[in-house]
Length: 54
Image 1 (cartoon, rainbow, N blue to C red):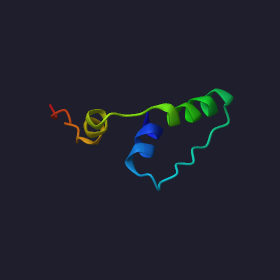
Image 2 (image 1 turned 90 degrees about the horizontal axis):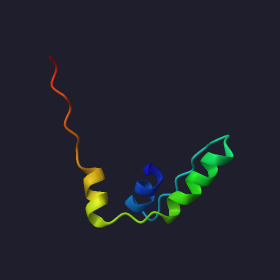
Image 3 (image 1 turned 45 degrees about the vertical axis):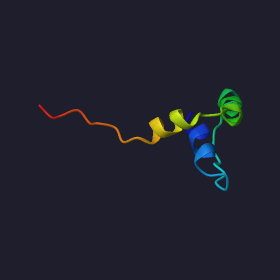
Image 4 (image 1 turned 180 degrees about the vertical axis):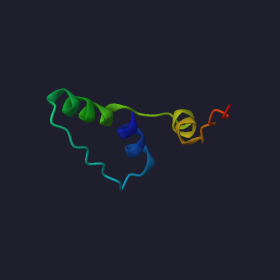
């Protein structure tokens, strides 16, 4: 999902993930087929709320 987000974030950015696992190579390639909607992309960009300390 992180790779899909990076690809959606900038058409000129080319993420170069590294891995030694064939399964992860397939996962990384599959990220190019994920098309995030505008809503999904904006929700992933939204700041998260941290839990308050106790």
